[in-house]
Length: 173
Image 1 (tube, rainbow, N blue to C red):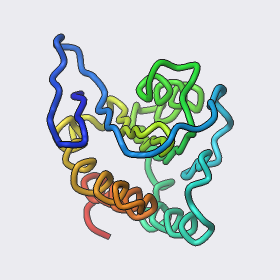
Image 2: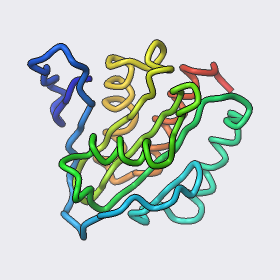
Image 3: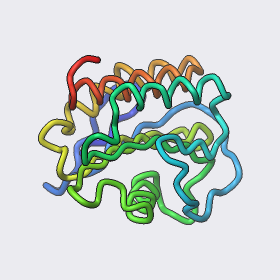
Image 4: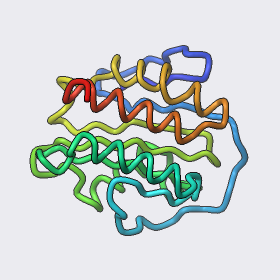
């Protein structure tokens, strides 16, 4: 996958190996996030960004698509920091590996972001890369997630991005 900056400029990798989409957001640095905690299900708000109403709204979105009805697995993760990992890509992989997200059919999708570290990523398992590729991920980030994040609307950005992902995979609901 490609990296992009806030101006929407795509930074192409030097090698042919796929690289993660990494976006830089605005915000302040917070305390370190060292260990991978247990999953709380669809929504893992370790940065405590969402209030109860926002959490309920996001969970209703997951339930609307009846995610448990198929082999795809989805989660949203917020983190203060990603140390001791080098970057958000490494910590996303650590979360996916620890939680075995989408392992059965490699059909996992994770939106992970750190308001404090100003980064976001959409992590897609190999089994879904025919439907969610570099171009679609960049489009989702650029048009649904990042504009809302820039305005401080983390719930709206997360909701909109997940809704588009679900529509790509399952059609409108």
